[in-house]
Image (tube, rainbow, N blue to C red; front, side):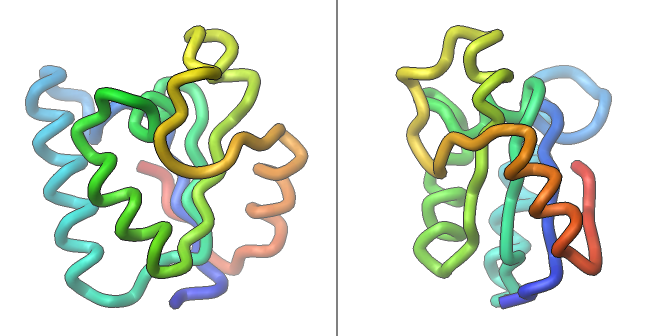
Length: 113
């Protein structure tokens, strides 16, 4: 586990292309990252990114695999509320901005997707 690495997910996919391409890319990204065996300490989801960890997401299997290997998955409570997704969380824990700030302050490296 990379104890000093946090990955931020800010969108429901990866990149700026069409939605279906974004979904394909994020699934491929997470699958290939899992294959490396070097998982991040935390994954933080906010804005549209929270949708990745909610029911109906195309990457729930991959996120659950990260979580089972020890990655802490944190979702922004304010963002879930904004999108009406509080009762649709499928993986991870709900946290606040304080949790996000703490994750960033404790990490040596942050990657934003």
